[in-house]
Image (cartoon, rainbow, N blue to C red; front, top):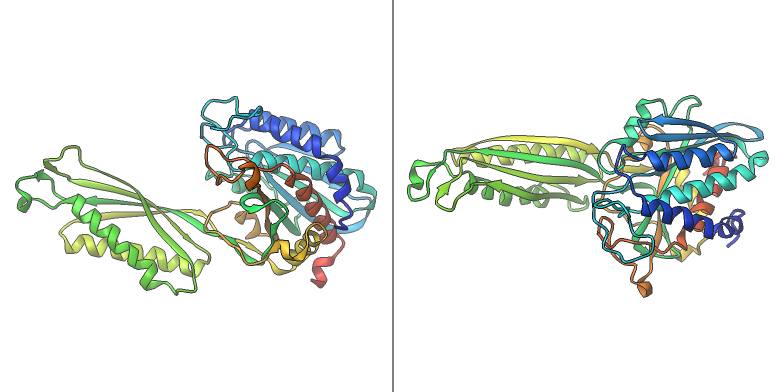
Length: 398
């Protein structure tokens, strides 16, 4: 463990925990992160950053010009929003906002971001180029990253590289996931409305049963992944909700299906979208019904570029031993930092925060989600080291 920033980050442990727990107690939903943004802006201003607020509605950008010659700009991203979940943890820092909880670790990300800002500000005279900090609202399905991009996040000055992290309850404390290519999947919403012909449950021959058609469509959609996608390419088509009918003796006129589509490449995404439409329309037509198929585009795959990933791996190797760094894991979860990585080469990595001995094993978006806060300084050290390496030109030779 020879990271030049690890000792400084570890010395901030109590402060990082205090920040994280304060934010955990006062969670805010997407585009409502007023208190969180104010705390971030005040912290950055006090450290000498040029601060811009209201970026993407409630986002905050901090700019630090290094004291050494350099023309590169590195963006570091930290999301701020919570989820509409009632917390079930019995801890002193339990959410004080009914029905709202930091159940995905964004409170930890903000704490890491403030830690990164603090450490880099202390080393300003030794930093070549420019640090740009992105404290993002509304990651949880509301498009906060694009909102900030549309407000000029990646310009003035233009960003050369972008780095981000996510704490992970899937991975043990003392580990990290650093991989090139797609780490998280594209995620789209699927809505199918079946239009049949309703009638009396005792006279089915006079009807077109929307529930029956919907059931056949659900079964048929399972062939899209198993028979139309290369087995080497992971993909998911899930129908998670069905709404139809009101009485047991009435054949429903309509049925509504809602689901999700996940994959790791745009090519597979196009096949999934095409085949879902063809299967749903074909099954419906064969049974005398009609369908409306709506696919709502969500986030794109989160794809890390090789050179920045190599730099982050080197930085992680200064904190963790080689066997503690996973380079193959990926998940069909989605992440809107993908919008930044589509426009700027960079890396998004995962930081282990699971502790089975303490019972910190619940998945993200669970009412009992929590993390081992010992991971926080590790995230600070890796991001500081990787950012400085990128500014120093290590990506050019990676």
